[in-house]
Amino acid sequence: MANRDVLAIGASAGGFEALRFLAAGLPQDLPASVLMVIHLPSQFPSELDSILTNSGHLPARFARDGEKLEHSRIYLAPAGSHLLVDGNVLHLGHGPQENNTRPAIDPLLRSAALCCAPRAIGVILTGTLGDGASGLWALKQAGGVTVVHDPADAAYPEMPSSALRRVKPDHVVSLRAMPALLNELVREPAGPPRPVPAEMKYEVMVARGDPGSMQEMDRIGRRSVLTCPECNGTMWEINEGDLVRYRCHIGHAYTAEVMSLALDENLRRALASGLRAIEERIALVRRLEKQASEAGREQLAERWERKAQEFEDEQMLLRDTIRRIDKIAARAPQT
Figure 1 (spheres, one colour):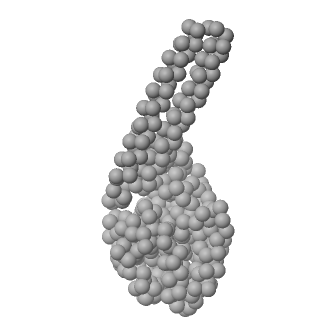
Figure 2: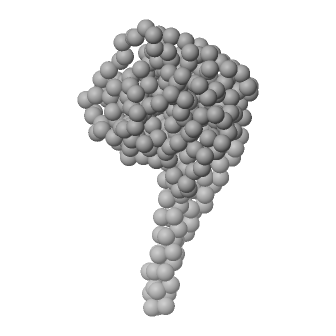
Figure 3: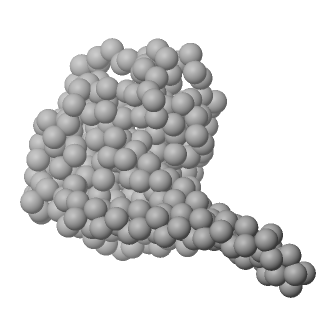
């Protein structure tokens, strides 16, 4: 009888130490393949594969597209690629970012839910914001086992807290207790198969890099009044239990929290752009005022002076608005 031999783990802030601890605690004869996603910057090369290999008993390497899974191995998502699993084969997806990141945790967990949920265990570790909650929800719906790092024990509790609120996972444990738990879970028999929603297949295909579809998005969500912070296209609202998230037909996806942050950033960019435009108008009008004055055209110079004063009043108003927004943001509770 098959065991639960696909172990999919996601981490963000604070995740390096957490992944090192897990790598050190997993046994050499682990009867499972370990797939790990951590939010890596693409600007710099990573030595995480060497670090994890030297930390424990399992060899670790960055996954290659099309390679077959082997037990007692750790496969890492490379920077800039979603890590996806299809049966016993790994794929690297170059679809749009999710929650402003690629690799993202949600695509890995959704792919595990689609292909092999009865054999899969999903784990959410320390991190900020909410990446992983949607994927873990999908895995649980499809019959996978779900594990969440106890937020009280996490270096950054927000990501496990989000998963805990929205998924009601099978296990909530400290990092210290997690290697022993995972070693037990991977040796359990695979669970019974369950039907998988068709929309899950669509979202995995988008993560791989297939084109999005408005018709498909109309089927899995409802059009919202929001536009995508990345491409300015229409966004669809998708409800998954207590989780609300957004996706455009190009494929960019956000949880509600990350969407809020992205819209805040867009607002700040728009205000900064408006302030720059006003400053340029002031500089131009002052130049025209000087030219008119030097040419002896005093009436024209006075008109330009009045116009410059109007723009400077607008400038002061916009600067005051930006300061007020910054003060409100500083007082807002951190979620």
